[in-house]
Length: 496
Image 1 (cartoon, rainbow, N blue to C red):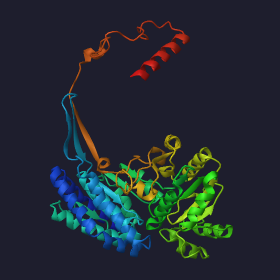
Image 2 (image 1 turned 180 degrees about the vertical axis):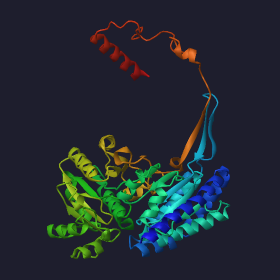
Image 3 (image 1 turned 30 degrees about the vertical axis):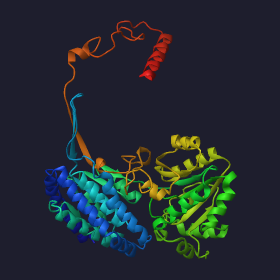
Image 4 (image 1 turned 90 degrees about the horizontal axis):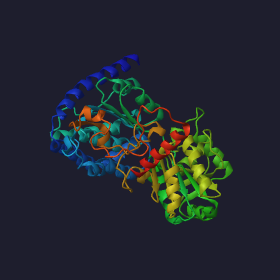
């Protein structure tokens, strides 16, 4: 094992030498040349969306290949359509009036860590956005999806070569070990780490010593407010939670409803394929969902509701699409209050939207803070309150969360790396695009002189100083005067 670890580390070092040369060549290409490479990759990825989807489903046992086709299209054609007109190379913006230029600068090499839940789609997506920003990319596959990830890399490499990309612009680790991934993340030539996967891996990326963009776990609740179009809201939630059997981290994990609408919502779930678990079934499934170490059991990931029920030891009607467990508490030891990457939902009933709002925040702070949640409502005031209070980076409205979060059914950037903001331990709250994988060099012309800055009345200042202006030599001032000056300053700032 030790020899294999050492061999994998050396292999990464060899890959990085080649990637550095490729990055230097990429940095000399024009925007047109870069765009040609990316367009060819997107075209090839879209053409192979179905074979790659079938390979990923077969290898991992997660999800449905039919839904993985759409994921592959999102990671290739849709992602490219969104970013194709972005200026990323050379002079991005020139404003001679203000004396500012902006120049795109590649970070060099992107370390692309790929999860097993969305393997081929994430590989296509990360390759396209990395190259669009002028970078070389090194893919680190999840061992559980290595075959399908490497198949996607091969398609990308062939397409890039056809479009004139430098050799080794896209590479992948083939001897997959933890040590190899760590070497990639810590390597001195790594420009930025793009980490999508488990929480431990994301933490390792941030502690590597190199810049990193990581994604934490999702645990988004779906709130159905009493003014919602309930049949549509339920349909959206079921469509989202069953899409690829719930493997997208933005998908709903809990349903929170107001008591005034609870009965109607429950009937609608049952009519559309929801099965409400009995206390015994909830207990049985809960034991399956949560492992003794407090983490969700990977055996249930991407499995259908029927399969999950069977694994838990009970049968449900063949028409069942999602499983719902009635809950009245939130805690880290409650498996239903955690992220469940399969068609299982917690069910909470609250007296009103204010208490529902609080329940949603409790769920998010257990897990998934900074990520995504969805609200179904026609009440703009309630939607606004949720937008102002929820600790998420994406509040989705009247849409399936899984598809809305990744930008398929919303105007968000099509992406398979969803930032969780500072509150979620992420470097960004955005859906990650090429703009996150480049630096911007600013060229700034001088606009004033030091003498003017030292003047009592700087160039461009008001002819008359504001009423609260006091010469610095007058230090005899009372607390009341300080309070009055502060009030006037705040008043003036509010008028700017």
